[in-house]
Length: 343
Ligand code: NAD
Ligand code: MN
Image (cartoon, rainbow, N blue to C red):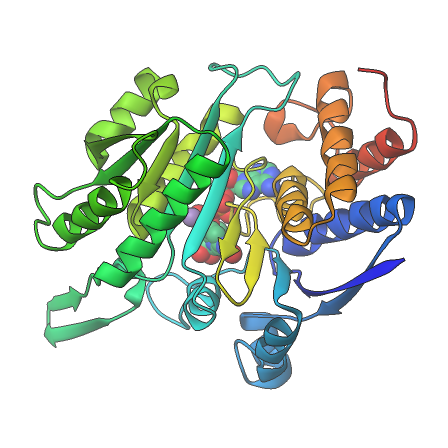
């Protein structure tokens, strides 16, 4: 049996609930496929500060450096003050430049737009998330938007490589270069330059506000959305609604050295601790992680079971119109792995 060492950050809010469900599902799937997991568990954010006086404990950094793979629940970030986002800090620290977010319908879950299959490729280390803000004089503040040739080129390269490898047809670079002529202009030039090496992939550019309308009118016109950090953040939540909401959409923060897998959603304080959260987004993030560590059989076992539970539709969480709690949903996934339906 193979054993994988994985750094686990359960997070806060609904984090502990969705992480517990995910770990349980992976343990059972791994047992069935001969794959073991050694979870190295760490707190981050406010909870970590209480324990260690550090928002991101040194031991957590070291664990990610050693294991090179982490599974992460959401961590609450204080609004308008307090500490910097743990998520942004980790992405920058490990240079996790590509945020990969596949938005795909699950079978059996009726949505306004069936058969959505979009991919959001979001630059993950620059833009207004640089955290460089200051007050120039009282009443006037400045937040710096950083866009570099290096950062834009490597995210474009990632998107086009992905398109080629997976036979995807179209990339739209999403921007606001009409207003931010220098920064978004640079981003677009890098996308175009990279795109020249991929004649088989159709390349277009859309302005971000128009894109929001276009998406809602007809999401099928898009395939891969390639964009900067802030637009990618906002478009991700918008696109999640096509497939049933934030409870479903997974994500991967990918770098050359290591990668952190986490859902698109946040800590959902409104439903935290109530056994109401949908763990599907984190479970599907774990499926991306399993592919990343070359555990295809385990990944497919988990994904097939998730899809079976949605197809049967009897034990869904409230966010997607069901009556079940987090635990009951997770148990249904375990059940589906134990007795797969003939499809
Ligand atoms: P959110 O994503 O936490 O929640 C938005 C809405 O979606 C809420 O109504 C919530 O109940 C619902 N929702 C989210 N995930 C769900 C799930 N798995 N199942 C069912 N319903 C779900 O966004 P927010 O409320 O704006 O942010 C809350 C906190 O999370 C903030 O502190 C924010 O900074 C943080 N956040 C963290 C991350 C991260 O750790 N990567 C990402 C986004 C937001
Ligand atoms: Mn977000």
